[in-house]
Image (tube, rainbow, N blue to C red; front, side):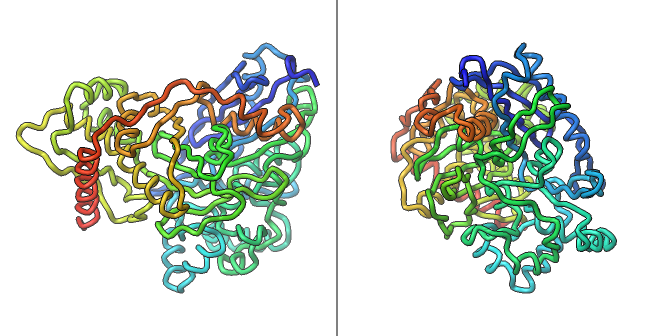
Length: 496
């Protein structure tokens, strides 16, 4: 294989856009295309996507990236897939047509089923087997809801007429005809035993899911099949698959236990590599599968902040305090501190490590001297404080100190936020040269499977630092600020 004239195509299927990126052997982007698709909100708290639209926009994005790169499809050595996780698709085995809109990870329609299971005392067993908390976030109760609401679909599922998959499976099926998934995605379904590494019959019974609909679980780096010739003009192996957050961890070359990445997007997703064994969290984090390179599973601890960059969008769109998001950095730097103001952006409750759905957004410490700049600075600081809570929980669960925090996502472009994150955690924060770490991780998984990259060391050489932020805050100042944050969170949780 001529690595100088061959490339890897990564399909990055997200919650709001379908993207495709072509990478060369050095991990450099040579072509990209992004296409948005509809968000469907049938009822308050319900979120759906049109699975057919996801496929069509993803296919168009892939073709667009190839065109942008000005290469031939025969130069694409492999395809990697990364995807929004937990989103649930059910389609007909005979026709390949979805029988219902995709139920999105954000959708809360199965919250009542979670309450029911919790009332039956099922939560400890679910957590022990899956590493997950009992929440409507995950795929399992979405299927429970679908089959309860539509008994005719349950009957068809039991007859083997239907297939289930998360978005990776849906794309694999449309590309190759195979019904398959990988461990990183399957570990988010709440139907998979991450210790025994198999679909769990007891969980399937508990959640009323017929096993006939389940995809085959294959290594994250390995051949899933070949894309049909009519799609791109060449049969291209689909050789790498991982959920978006695990793919980002891989794209950051976080290959050693204790390595951490944090994605600063609408929310924050923090993952720590914990090595070949899952770590049972005592601090309300999730244990999840990071990837399988075909030689055994690598696991991770994960924590989620629900509202991160979204708090800046709120200041811009609802509060009219910002003309644009970039203005937040300038305003935050215009004052020495937040003047004792703390914002706890619990607009949809608090995620890890609290998992408090009843907490609500709270502002404390206001005085007559509080200005717009203080308010904006406090909002930016809230992103770093919430992430700090995750890092602290991970250190306690894993028994490992953090050597550095590898950061990506849109809000990582805010230098004030990155410096404050380094200061408040006392830990170096580093940004990669290639910011598209999620797609890059999928590309690496695919390229490793076909020998495009020779091994992890070959991949590791591609990781290049663009910028670093060193902690420079005095310890006594840091302790005082953290104490104030803890009090603010307690206030948000006590308001009912």
